[in-house]
Length: 509
Image (cartoon, rainbow, N blue to C red):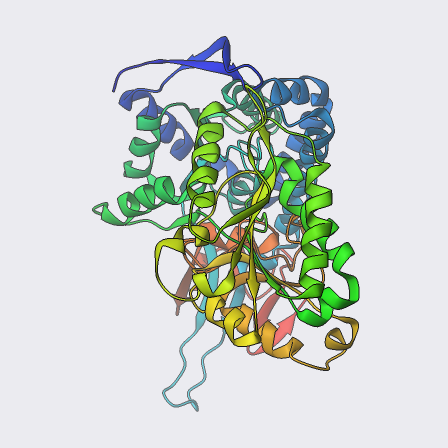
């Protein structure tokens, strides 16, 4: 593997700014993984790792100005957006610190012997242990929240797993800065610096998922890249879990009654959601089923007005810009497709938002319009106009798995009258998060959050956002008839760590 330079690039101009590092060699990947593996013991104490997570949040906040400036120079996402994302990242680290302190994620279950059961029950004690080193693949569009200190890293460290992060090429300088902050936080708790490794380069990412000491992987990115790594993880002599977020169309269904009731508000809301962050959100609504007829016409006009008033923006890199422009042209050239607001090039380095319309029946059966059922990364959505409910259902039946699915209902439908419940039931198999009268952009960091969905949205049933993301990096183990003196403290009868647990069938807190 050749060691090529890694450059920081300004997306506003496409020019190289500075050399940040070099692509990691096979030996350097091996060294990073082995250093992480050696650091496992430093994370055994839950008190230490909870404090480490909180210190990491404190130090990231203290370095806010430098980090936001570096992030904006490499992503052009803007200081306001990036400051908010950094705050979310710090909140997430502290939230996992609280989860570690509480200890419920260990799922402690104790059963004492019962000879009267059929078959008899021996002494059984079960809890969860960390898997080992986790490979984290950073996302392009969230340089803080889904990158070096993002959700995969935070949840893995919370589980007691060291990480080796494959930096995203769109923000290598920021990745180095954030990794340095995390290592400073580790040092304050006598945790080895190797607990957070960082490597650069495409080949390094491939070598990382193949390394025998890597026990699991988390990925956020494209279907093509994620599927290649997923297959590599499965093809190893010892396969490992690969939790990948790959791609999502995030369908929206607008009922005729909802359009008649508030077409203008829905159109404006859709415009705000599909253009947010220049359309570079994994939960951007990419396909909208809207009714034909007068109410649908009002909605399209409102969407047209709002999108037309939205400025052109900079995508994360020029490769994405080229792909967006080519993808728009290919979709707009399909028979029957119209462009009320033409998306595409907004200048030498920017793109303009827009949307396409198409009769829904063209998507109801397999054919050349299937391209419209694939995600196009950037400020574009497709509005499919349906004549009746069966036509909308036919389109939904052809969709792959998604992160989100949304329905816009009228006031009466939301109160239980009409087909509201039927539409929810129709959308539930398609997505991990189903929204009513809202928009999918914006993923709250909350215990009940689920950010995942059927393939190709994700490669597993897990979430990458919210407290239960920690479950990805743990495995259960049960001890049978083990003497009390040999048991880990988590499984002893006197519960010296004060953990919530299920004890002989009763939940104790």
